[in-house]
Image 1 (spheres, each protein chain N blue to C red):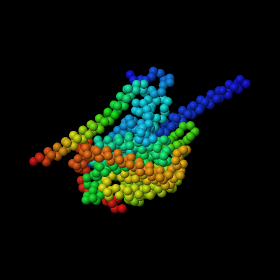
Image 2: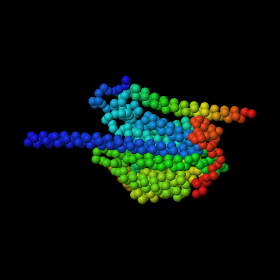
Image 3: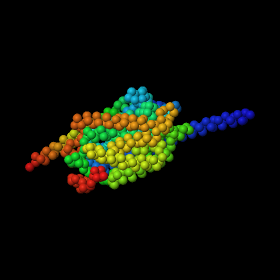
Image 4: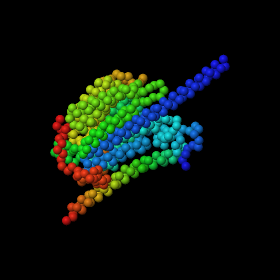
Length: 451
Length: 64
């Protein structure tokens, strides 16, 4: 009898030890998962670097590159200082709750053995923020001052987007708890916010010299379209880290959930990310027959289905992405005809497609339940949220760039724009042994104007 | 100098200065100052570079 009791006790102890081991490994796996998501997300920034340098004329290629590199390097510390605190403090609105653990001098914001996860979550969010900075970066190439750009990119990358994320991408965010907001792939809180912020900046920044002649849009051809295309494909690659980082790896027996606590899995994301990617490329190519737009279409397609990646039938995701690709080109044409010089189509690709993505969820997934006690997804909730997110992005972008313009520190002088920022500010040339920069109007037709 | 513990038993936050909040505040402030200084220094560099270029252009025009 005694032996049997001892045996049961030892079995119980062994079971508890195994449970502790499993829990420890689950937590470690969670850390590993987000670590690699973050590493993949860095590919987005490598892609933006190539994409924007290629999209510039050669006289501004290095300026476009250094702007992108500095944005990443500035947003990370700025996000460390304020970003994480904003995310955790503002889910109820504009009055912060006290979250001392998220302040940069908290013990939680550093190596700590009993809080596995905080650092990798913070890192993933910091790179989401850096993505918003890169979205702005491409649109403003060849005429913005680097110093002004850094102010704007830190603002969007470590304050504005994360405020929207606190409202709409937090389990207690008021857009979710009051309106049933659904945006699993951050189409609204990252892409739409950054896209509309960019629009606000572009209005004040103005077009590149020579972009409009007597109101007619001209082509300013990229100096290396192949580099731009490769960069875009690298961004798509990085998106798998970005979207993987949007899923919650739960320990225990819960399994994968969305950031809203509803069940999902990586397969759902895989189906719809790839189908959206393919549809977007086809839609944009159909609308333009242009390689740059075809590759941008991959982004459009993914973003346009990102808000509902967990809910769509893959065929529906494809159809939505094709339609979004065509509509995004129309949006770019609309903006260009109104004198907005968006050098890479960022407002349309990220802002417009992100906005559409939120509406699509409202149309096709209305009635889907959220976590218990929260309102279901509705078109009204999605539409109101989309408008609010567009405003949250646009207003600070417009106001701060307006102030910088009034201080005459937003844009490089005309003469510098003529020669190129590389030679004047960076005192270097991207291709010192190559020929001179283009000085005549490109003969490549404007695809947007001719559709 | 800044270690916050002397053995690994019951350690949680183990980074240097973790037990000295005033130092952590100071370091965070230093990060902010460096970021702001960097932007200001870039602006100053731009002002100088643009002014030098404008001067060079003016000198060229005056040259016979």
